[in-house]
Amino acid sequence: MTRMIRNRIESSNTATWNMADMPARRFRAALTLLGLLLPTIGLSADEFPTEMDFAVVSYDSKEVPISDDAVILTFAAEGAAKLSIEGYGDAYFHLVCVGSETFSEGGPNYENWKDGKWTGFSHCVLRDHDKGDELRMKSSTDMQDYYFEFSGGTGRWKNAAGKLAMYIQHPYVKRRVDENVANRVYFVIYMDGKGKISL
Image (cartoon, rainbow, N blue to C red):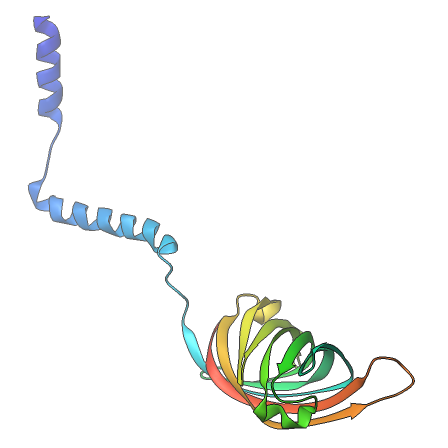
């Protein structure tokens, strides 16, 4: 027993501690802990101020009446867009979108779009002119407020995220009726807006 106690004392005496080194040890430990915590506390990547110009045309949108003064309009649209990203410059895209909008309280004539209520959504794929990389985007509509939200893609847009507030500057809408039971709606829309994007 005595020998065991002596061994423990000798073992403890061989440990050397440099008290002056303790602050440095604590600092390194704090850095290690911070490195472990950073991925879990929701820190976002750098966001860059961004402006967007966006124009689409749809030749064959279809509508379904849901009341005397409201319709759901489904559409597939195609067009072009330009993103101006601070620090990155301009990027040009060909785009395709599909979605639906519910239009109410403005009468059946879409040319009175400012007097009605719009709610809806769309999903778009933007293919950039330089390399053909794809940027995924979805939109949401609430009254006259339109929002575009980025959700990744391929190549340089793989980690893209962010949100833009968009505004319709020029809508042209025309109703067409042909032999098909469903009415067809032709529209051309130009929008612009701004927000932030992270890459």
